[in-house]
Length: 422
Image (cartoon, rainbow, N blue to C red):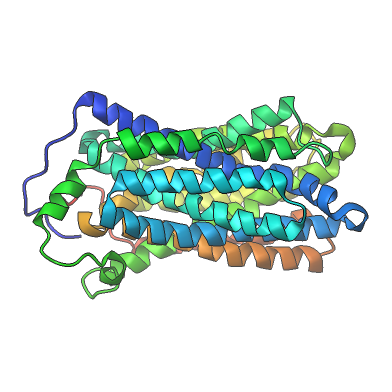
């Protein structure tokens, strides 16, 4: 972290700051819809497209493939579009990201094969990945330091508000093998937000000031691996990989598990399960930045890692779908395991100077998605090797969270840091 050597640029007006926060929040809400879509829709889509070839094991494998494809796209998109945000501005890159995930998601309503859906989920992921670093960088730079724990928590809550809204919607209109295309068509609506962002949203004054002072060609990705930044870059990657892999290689198996146990007679049960998790996750994502602000960055991450590991094991070993205790445990796991993401929204922008903030945050956060793509595919192989035993797979993968108990002590403590403005 470089010291602050230049005066901070002027803040936007209160109205402009609220507009930035609202647009970025909505961008992440719709981001969350895309992240939550396939855990609910994967089994119905596979039953519809595979027809008589469908089996529960094959359904689980395709769930892993769809998830890995989205995560791989998000990892690439987060790095590429994060770098674009450092080059051309936060708002333009954010608008492009929203358009990409909306338009390719809508095309999913016309697919005829699993392979077509797999490709589209990758393309959706490009936009999903680009939204986070540009939205977080924009809001972090437009709001004063005293407000950042609050607005960072609100931003990350947006992801899970999207998942929660999707769960509520599909509890009223269940996604079934006979009726699933409508939800993909509906996913194209946020393209209107992307256009508004491109033409009307103000740019970050901090980014504009940094570009005005810079005398060097902009090569943010290369700069992250120079001697003065490589250590914090690697730290950011490691502490982002752990919660991301944990969320998708472990936690998300509960939804197809609930769908399988409940069966076709209770089509709304998986949506209810997603809803309970998303409610906990919405609160957890909001509280994560507050917890980091109160307890310090390192201690809070340590406690979140420990709690996530314990609760994920409990979710898969001490309860099961249709039991009265299942949804309360799902809620608790969703709350604790997503404290990470509010924490990351506060911490990652503090690690990197303005000139590489979106690229650095995007690289760190979305490297977790590279790890997730690998982790989910490995979990899919475990699922097959363990005879489609969801509890065993989820329990084994929950140990990913335990790595955070150790890894965080190598991270810089930024608890008293201010954003560097060049």
